Image (cartoon, rainbow, N blue to C red; front, top):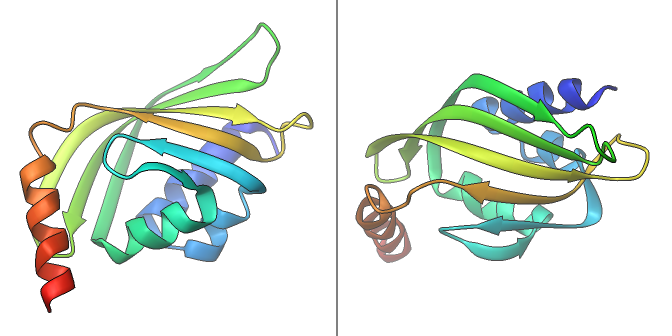
Length: 132
């Protein structure tokens, strides 16, 4: 599988809420750095993200493949995220991936986007979900 295939499969898993599908794209010790969730093991992060999500819709804008060592990718996309509360938030983000040596799985991902416009909706959705 090419790194570009990995990126497309990753977005497909986000769009369908495929927890096991997204987990196999990451090494067992992979971690995610998220502006909303903090640093989490990848397997835990996606369980938490999908629990907080009613629906995801992504639109791919760009894939940037590092040419230096070939171990980094950046995925630029528009994300329409329906929170568990039903609130829809939309934003552009960049996910920066570090690849395993064989370039077949991700070892780390750093998510970059401005959380200011959606943080209060996200926090309200999580509080509502925990109380219910």
